[in-house]
Image (tube, rainbow, N blue to C red; front, side):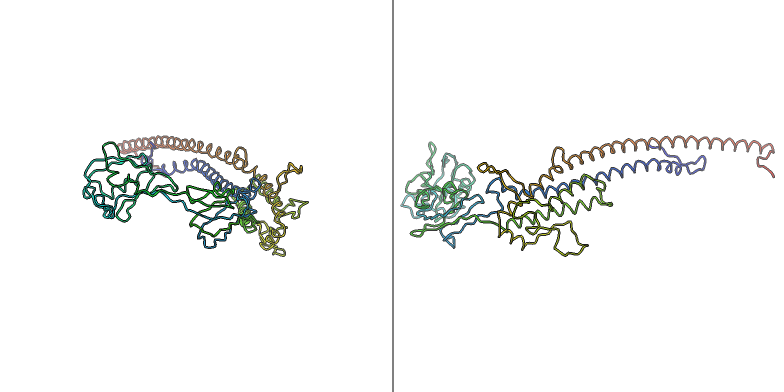
Length: 485
């Protein structure tokens, strides 16, 4: 508990003196707190810049993933066209990895699901049941027993108080029965959740007769599902579903959704892979946007007024990245640098005061370059894989060189951002310990001053009291205490 005195004994402004002395020591603590806040701000800016540089790296991966397979190749696109313009008979889709092919398809039969109906209003005498009113109880329809039945091995219980709605709900709420129930023409219809010629097995448990009473065990109420039958390039196939994967179509990456029997008509499906200038252009725009943000944010934060002023390693990373983008990448290639495909620091003849650190894309020039030689654009951007047959070694493009330049910055183990943030975290932690210790010292200093000034005040008060007593005694014997001139 801190002490305080008012200087009543001495009449001196002791509290003000104490606060003045303490403020000098507190200023030292406040200075440490300011240093800690500055380091916190620097750490936040570093983390933000790390995210920005990571975005540049991510943008490069959109390009270099093409070296690992066609499924990730943004330099080409897969297109699907069919002679079935209105998608009346089928729809066709293809992944990026789809094999180019021409398919001639006819559909002889669609896959349907097995269904089982109850006896209905039109059933023969003695079996007529009407489930149109879902609020009715089974007892209202003449069934007033405790019963258990199974659908595909899943057990259900009913009694006379079970409502039609309740029975339908219980069946539909089951994840194991493999059917869905609905009302139709006064009957309860069960439909298999899977298409194709699959069985719906319904049985009464021992001593029960509900399934037979309602009509679900009567084979005449069963409509067996059918498999889809179709022909692809003269080869007839079957499937339990109308959604055909590449395993059913026989072509990698190509799937079909059968919608209607084609009769005598044959649907032609054409899968092509072709150069995708627009896709590459959009990816380049994303890269340029990320690159410009990284450069500009770094320049802002490392200038004389920035949070990271003096971070020379960061400026080195920035400069290397910038130089990589503007350097000649492929001296022997058709396109030697990004400027050859329309990516530069600005238009020719631009004002000298204009921003020359940001990249811009001349879209028209890029599209012309890509149309003229898409393979050369690809080689400039991502290089080539090694060719064991010819002995040619792999080459690097712009994006791999950018990735290499960023590795020093972004490596999770010893990269610049990781190492610098660890250093800052250590400094922030040390300052936090110092601040706690110094603040405790300030409070102890305040208490020590308070005790010392309190003692001084008491002594002054004692002296004043002694002086007053002495003055009274001298006055009583006629001796004055005031000095005369």
